[in-house]
Image (cartoon, rainbow, N blue to C red; front, side, top):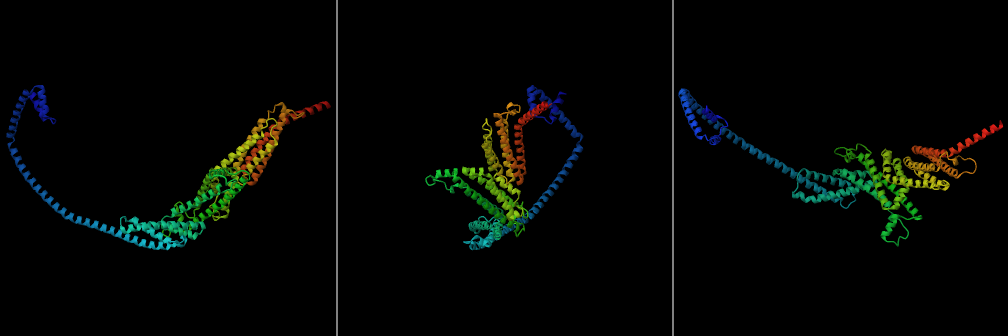
Amino acid sequence: MGGDELLSQFVRPDFDSQTFVRAAVRNESVSEDLSQLKQGIAVLENQLREQVVSHHDRLIEQVSHAKDLEALVGTVSSGVANLQKSLHKVRVAIKEPYVQLKVRTDQLNRLQLTGEVLRRVIRVRELSGKLKKFMALVEGKEPRSVLKELAQGAACLFEIRSAMTLSDLQGIDAVDRERSYIAKADSTIQEKAFDALNNAVLRRQQAEVGASLSVFLHMDMLPTAVEKLLGSLLKASGEAVREALDTASLPIEAEDGRSRVALAAAKAKGPSGADAGAWKAALWGRLEGVAETLLGKLSQVWALHRVLCKKRDSQTQRLLLELVSPSYKGEDPRFFCSFWSRLMATVGKQLQASSEQSSFVKGMMVSEYPKLRGILIEMWTTAKNDTEAGASGAVGEAERGAVVAALEPFLTLHKTRQQARLSDAATAVFANRGTGPQPAEVASFVKGVTAVAQAGRHDAALSLALAAVVDRAVRAFAAQGREMVPNASDPEMRAIIGVPTGTQTRCFAVFNASVHVQTTVKGLEASSTKAGSTQAARVFGELSDVCLALSKAILEPFVTSMESSVGASITGMHAADQ
């Protein structure tokens, strides 16, 4: 059994001779294992001999079959070798024509590419020659007199660019020699075409505007040119506002004896007295001129808009307006409306910039904001009622809103300043706590309220904004008035016999002031209703009720006391008669 176990290790798949030897040495059984191995080998030899003897005939037959198999394998190997030779011949026969075909195809592609490049080089040279002829006709002449030549030159430039884009002509001497001239011609055509376009728009010559736009259409630069033109008009408008509010050109006393820095500081601060009035008159006159300038710019853009809405691209038959921006369709007025919004934003920014540079200008526009607003609203009204743009419906409430939005910072400052003035006037009314409001202070407060409210009488939105200022001031007036009136149970308030007490005198003064203010706001309510400012009229109506409530609070103790006294007298008289 032990020998069988030892020999069984040699048929295991994971048998390792070195592992076997190391185990025998470790167990000190080398001699014993070697003896068993010799016995096992002898047993195996005997068994093999017996197997060969008992199966001799079958083994001889298998040897014969093996020889036949070797012969068959040789035949197959020979056939495979012959097949490989045939495949090699076929491969050689196919590869040569394929290589030749590929070479010919590459040659043909290169020939075609070379021919295309040559054709484009020739085309560039031809177009460059035509361009030189057109540029010779343009040189030294007014842009508007050579618009046709400029358009033809622009068409040549566009074709030259297309040829250079479709084929890589870099490094070709015949083309490289023309590049500097082409770039110079491009710059010249753009400059002259823009000058012609700007000139035509300023003069509102629609035919010339269309011809100038054709030049940029040929150069595939129409949107860029239109945007540049609008930018120049906006810049000119901002410059007009800046120049109108530049106090450096206005005279000031003792101008000759001051240094340049001192003179600039004095002019930024502005004069006082009569000179201040002269400055304001001059500046308001300039701003009215600016409004005329802005109307002119709007009229010029409308002329441009009309051309863009009428003229079409000869190739695509699309309107030029649609080429300027795909969002515009047909006679879309949004092009004009967009410029209006941008123009008002530019004017607003320049007004703020000018006010920051001069405290005099800022004070004038803040304190007299309704006048500033009136000038620009009048411009909007004129554009709406007396221009082609207005007649077509392109000038509406949205454009008026753009005007108001541009002036919003000045409205905020104006309201803050007026609120402070009215608050001070209301405080001054009740400064004398002993005798109560004085007629002069009440008249001053009422005058201020009227001035603030009447400043917006022709503008419903402004009227409502200023009515809010008046509302806060009058409510503050009423609150301070109530503080000066004691409780209804105060004995002095109920006394009806003899000379009026100090408390009664003070209350009567508050009552008179309240009636005066109520009469004023009632009149403002009526005038606002007549002017169509219904929301402002509603505010003034509520203020009238506030003043009426104050008056009632003052009179109620007297009336109650008088009723009681009269009732007691009548009762006494009736008792005496009986």
